[in-house]
Image 1 (cartoon, rainbow, N blue to C red):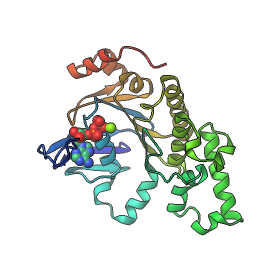
Image 2 (cartoon, protein in one colour; image 1 turned 90 degrees about the horizontal axis):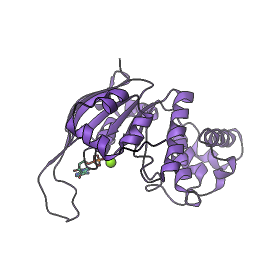
Image 3 (cartoon, rainbow, N blue to C red; image 1 turned 90 degrees about the vertical axis):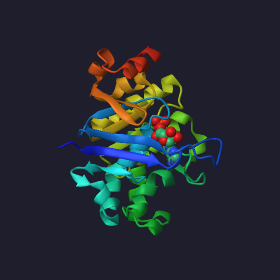
Image 4 (tube, rainbow, N blue to C red; image 1 turned 180 degrees about the vertical axis):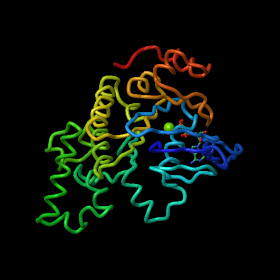
Length: 273
Ligand SMILES: Nc1ncnc2c1ncn2[C@@H]1O[C@H](COP(=O)(O)OP(=O)(O)O)[C@@H](O)[C@H]1O
Ligand SMILES: [Mg+2]
């Protein structure tokens, strides 16, 4: 059994997001009848040009948005049939990291608050205890310190603010937050796309290291074939809402079957690392 089983997943938006405000341009099949398996311990790369539906697919898999039709199973459990309580449990096992990890976070949060928030939300510590001395506070501090070390940051980062850090360091903080609940599966949605190539390479290497250390499974989304090929066990190629091709990384990069895959390979001939 695959860790994640996606069957006939479809998302139709009533109209496309448009800069021209208000004018409907008809419905958009952002994700169109996608079926995929993601095996425990692998990195499945998801590559395609901007607007092809990658982020929508990632969000559907985590049930951050509801599909129009189709199903997602995680460890055999039907996510779309899960009630609130079961979904809450499942949320611990599935996390997402974004291109800009702090776009949606309160700027008054310190790094410690950002990383500890999932622990507090999921009842790993009592909220009131975070501000008191005593065992619960020490537990949070110890866990945050452990997570900072795991992502290559100094313990002193704990009491600083995310905006004090560089883009690469902020991405490390976002990864620490995703790891806080000992998660199993992470959707990485363009996590290095906003970073310089060398900084991005360090983050990609960190993700690979964490995968080995913690047995993580990734869906790694990028518009860049060199980034995807470096990290992925297998690659799925997405074009206009559909998966046009899926296979082992060597097969996709050396013997692409689809013309669109060949165009992605030709557009990005340089290697990341
Ligand atoms: N919330 C939304 N409402 C309407 N259209 C959307 C929404 N989110 C995404 N879309 C549309 O769905 C398509 C796929 O978008 P997205 O999944 O963000 O692609 P990608 O991540 O590959 O760039 C695009 O045409 C986009 O405009
Ligand atoms: Mg996207």
